[in-house]
Image 1 (cartoon, rainbow, N blue to C red):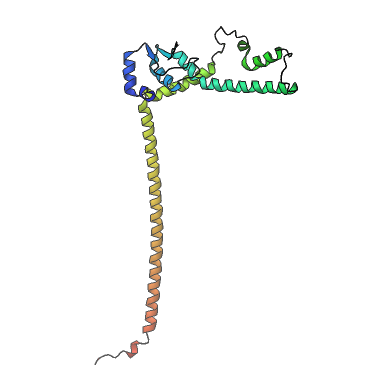
Image 2 (cartoon, rainbow, N blue to C red; image 1 turned 60 degrees about the vertical axis):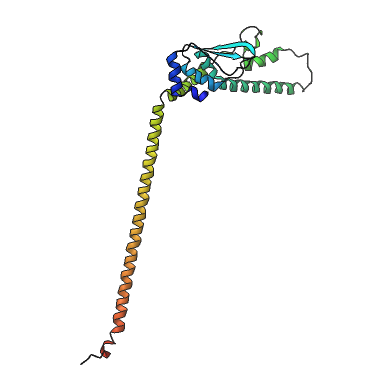
Length: 232
C-alpha cells in the first residue's frame, strides 16, 4: 500500500478526484503513541486541504489530521529522541541526589520542592503544572518542523518529478561508462607500448645474433675455401 500510494498512476487518479477525506486502513493505537510514518507520509502527498481520519478499532475513537498535523508528526522521531535524552538526564540527577542523601530506601519527610525543581529543569514548568484535564502542554518545535517539512518537500520532489531523478541517474551512469572507457583505452595504449618495446628489443637481439652467426660462419669457412676441388 505504501509504495502503491507514491506511484504516479495512483497519485494522478487520487489528485484528479480531490477527495475531502482519507481513512486509514490500519487501526491507530488508542493513545496515538504509534505513528504510521510511511503511510502518513504517502497520504500527505495528496491530502491538500483534506483530512486523514484514523480510527482506533475496536475502540470508538477517531483521530482527525490535516496536513499541518501530519507535518508535525513527521518531526516525532526527533522529539522522541529529545524526550528520551531529557528523561535520562532527569534520572541521573535524581540518582545523584539519592546517593548524596545516603541511599535511604524510604524518605517521606523530604520536601517535594527540590524534586519539582529538578522536574521543571528537565521537562519544563508547564509539564509540572499539568492537571490531567487540560491539553498536554508540549509545544511544537519550529526548528524541528522546518527540518521535517524540508525533508518532506525533498521526498515529494523525488516522487512528482521522477524524470529528474532518472535523468541524473542516466547522466551518472553515462559519466561512469565514459570514465571506464577512458581507463580501458589508457590500459590498451600502455599494453601496446609495452608490446612494441618488447618487439623492438626482440628484433634488436635477433639482428645481433644473426650478425654474430654470420661472423662466425665467415671465420670458420675462410680457411676451407682453398681445399675446394674445382672440376676441370
